Structure formats: structure tokens, C-alpha cells
Length: 198
Image 1 (spheres, rainbow, N blue to C red):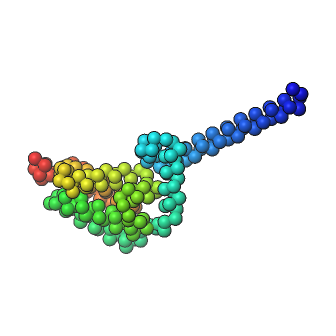
Image 2 (spheres, rainbow, N blue to C red):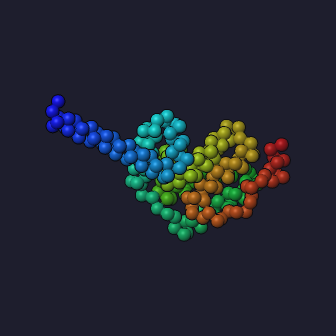
Image 3 (cartoon, helix red, strand yellow):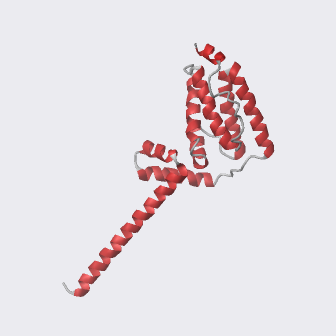
């Protein structure tokens, strides 16, 4: 083998190694960006799909879908209206936890719709919400799961209280009023709630 052929082989090998390293670095950077953007939702999607490439493709598709939505913040008037509605629902919980959870679920749908999220099936709503609210979407899923159990008559008052806490977390994030609703109503079950559970 002459020197020219040997040099050509070395150059080709070097190019393959550099290309492989560049691909690895790009993939690693993409993974880090998705992990940072989606937080716990990244891990959940990875567990659900079983493959990193599929999870990242799924999250990338979600992000592209949401980029095409006409999302907007709430106006001050809308924020006030929804906050007042939430306070009424929260107060209702003491006397009628089942109705409160149902109304909270409906109110979240209204807030999402007003913000521009398509209100289709639950899984699509949760996927859309996960793009801009990845740290609280699991609260939405947990609250919705309890609401479904409630519809089957399988949720206790404590379960319903947990649903309200989950819903409140997402509501606060969607409405952008984190300092509101610190009444403590859902910090500990009241004596009345304990009596209902017993």
C-alpha cells in the first residue's frame, strides 16, 4: 500500500470519527435541551415509549404542534373572572366535594380553551399542556384520574381533596396567579371532611 492510499484511509477514518463525534454531541445536546424543557415529562414519555429516540421524537412533535397553536395569555378581565370562579368552586368543596371536582375540571377546560388550547380528548390536552407547563401537567393527569374514579363512585373525599390540589396547581400556572388561593382550605382535611370520609 502506498503512502497516498494510507493517507486517504487515515483522512476518511478521521472524517468518520469526527462525524460520529459531532452526531453524538448534537444528540446529547438535543437530549439535554428536551430534558430541560420538559422536566419530569421527559422521563414520563421515555418510560411510556421505552426508547429515547421515540420519546424525543414524541416530545419534538408536541412542541411543533403547540408552536402552530394560537396561544395567548389571559386578559386581566379573564384572569379575574376565572380566579373568582375558582374561589367559588373551592368554597363549594366543603359542602359538595363531588360537584367541586367536576366544576374544577370544567373550569380548567374553559381556561385552556380561552388561552387557545384545543379542547379535544384529554390525552391530547395533556400533551399540549406539557409543552409549556411540563412541571404541572402531571397534576392535571392525577386530578383527572381521580375525577374519572369519582365518576365511577370509587373516589373518597380525601381523593377528591387531592384532585382539587392537583387542579389548583395547574389552574395557578395557566392563570398566572401563583400567589392567589393561599387560604389553606386544602392543606389539611377539615373535621367536616373527616366525618364525610368516615
